[in-house]
Image 1: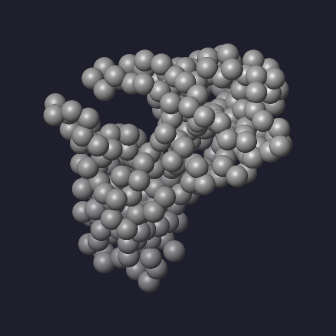
Image 2 (image 1 turned 90 degrees about the vertical axis):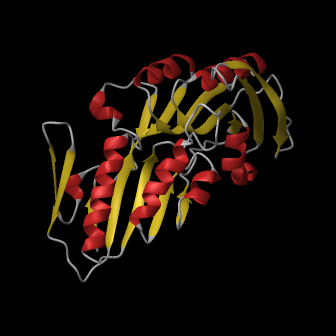
Length: 276
């Protein structure tokens, strides 16, 4: 199997070289392809340059007549999975159209924001990560999207907390949070005396307003609980510190960026390495 790792080129089984032209254009060379073997391409699409590099790789592989599979650790545009307003572009549709033109045999998307990415990107399937679990840990979904994404794991937890939020579609500002309902899978009902861990989980953290709002809500409702959070795609360095100042434990992955190479993480933060 030929492996082309665009996140960690040094871990590729072939030679992957990248240069930046004077006008800022990235350019890729791939040498040493075994034409008797298929190809696995590993990437993150965190910005337009990443997408352009992937387009170049697809062009090379298709001209060589090779079958290839694609694994996307972070998908740019995934959160814009519908038309928000007449004045805005349908970003996910644009990215999906480009990926479809590359004609990969299979596309694996790590923690897609919604099923819309899977419906727009041909021959795609999701890869969901395991949620951290401690004994008697309650799980909290900050909104309906998270509940849909992870709901199949509800039975693993003694208590499940379903929250909702109100967001202004024009400004993106959050207007409030509330606990819609709780589900008990144990004989002991969840109440304000609960003193175990509660894990807030979701796929993406950018500005962090949702998770700070949910933290305040949980802190009022369960003042004795240990509040933890796990997100897959952490895209904002400043928010790491903000979450660490509120939550007892913070966990995220290197899907968007290897944060440990970028900065020193707070003591109560853990970065799970999923990029290989």
